[in-house]
Length: 541
Image (cartoon, rainbow, N blue to C red; front, side, top):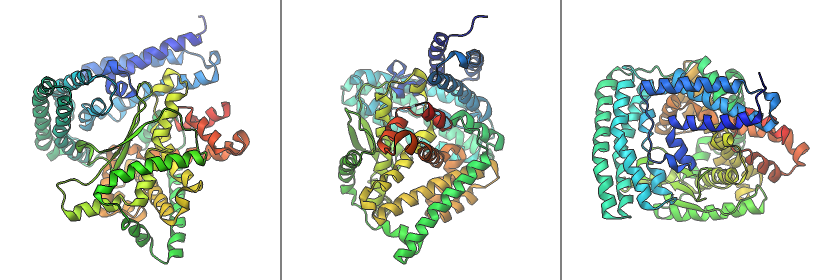
C-alpha cells in the first residue's frame, strides 16, 4: 500500500472539522463561520449514533497517517485532530453529557453573538435568531426523551435556574430585532412564543419529573478523570501528581499571603476584607473599567510584555441580564474566522431590583484592586490579547478550531502574576493581595475538582475547603463547589498557569535570551494548544 501523504492529512483535516461542526454548529458560529448561524444540532440518539460511527472511521483514517510522512508542526496538527474527535466521543460515551446533563441542551440557544457582534446586517442576524428560537421546542423535546430518569442533583437544580433566565435572554433578541424594523421585531416575537413556552415547560418537567429522583452521583471517577486530562490537554501526568502540584502552589501562595498579613499586622481574612472597602460606586463602575482597559494596554506596551497586534478594539459593556448569575466579568473575544476584531468586556453591575445592602455587597466584590486584576486577566495581556495573536498568526485549520481551556485560562491567570512581576500597579500591597487571593481560589478549584471527582469529596466538604483556603464567603464557596460538580475542568486555571511557568523556566533564558516579550509572542503564536504539547512545540520553535 502506498504511504499516506501530507496532502491526505490536509484532506482529512477539512473532513474532520466539517464533521465536528455537524455536532457543534454553535461552536462553528462562535468561531466566526457564519454559514452555521442559526443551526442547532440534532441531539437525538439516532443522530448521535450515526455521528459516532463516522467519528470512529475518521479516527482510523488519522491513525493510518504516518508521522514519518509529516513535518513536525503537522504531526501536532494530526494529534490535535485526534484529540478533537476523542474528546467529542468522551463527552458522548464516557461522561454521557446528553444523557445526564440538562445544561447540554440549555446552553445551545445562545443569541449573544448575534446580538453583540456587528458582523452582518441586522436582518441577517435576526433571521438566525428566529431560526434558533424556532428550533428550541424540538431541542427540548429531544432532551426529555433522552435524559435519564435519575440525574445528578446539582445538574438539575442549576438547569432549572438557567431555564428560568432564558426567556429574558430571548427577549433581548426581540429588542435587538426592533433596532432593525417593527417587522423584524414581530418575527422574533412570534418565534419567542414557542421557545418561551418550551423552556418553561422544560423547567417544569425538570422540577416535577427529575428533581425528586435526583442524586448526588455526579463524580467522574479516577479513570475517566485521567482520560479527561488526555482528551482535553494531551496530558498523561497522573491525577495524583496534578493534585500534588495544586497543593504545592496553594502552599506557596498561602505562605506569601501570610507573610504580607504579618507585615501588615492583620489576619489574612482582614487583609482580604479590607480590599473590599475600596470600591467604586455603581455609577462609576463602567467608566472605571473603560479607563483601566486603556491604562493597562499602555502598561503592556511600555513594559514590553507582549506585542499588541493592530487593529484592536475592546468595548466595555454591561453584562446581559441572562448571564448576570454566571459571571462577575467576562471577555467575549472575536473568533479566529470572525471579520470584526472587536472584543467585548462584559462587567456585571448592580441589579436595579437589589436592595441598597445587596448593591453594596456586590460592589465590594468589584473593588478597585479586584477590577484591575480582572481586567489584566480578561483584556490586557489576558484573553483579548491572546485572541488578537491567535487571529494574526497563520494557523492550520486544526489549530484554528482547537481551544485548550487550560491554555486559554492558564494564560490569563499567568498574566496576573506576570503583570505583577513587571511592576503592575507599582507592585502595591493591594495588587499582590488580590493576585494571591485569586490564585488561592484557582488552586482550590483544582483541589476540589479532583477531590470531588476521584476521592469522594462531598459538595459540603469542597465548600468548606474553599471557605478555608480561598477565604470565600459561605454563599460564594457553595456556588464554587457546585460549579465543580458539572465543570471539573475549572482546574484549568492553575493547571495551565503552572504549565506556562514550567516552559518559561525551561526556555526563557536559553531560547529567548531572557526576553519575556519574545517568549510571550512565541507562545501566543501557537494558538491555544493542549498544554501537554507546549514543551515539544517550544522545542521545535
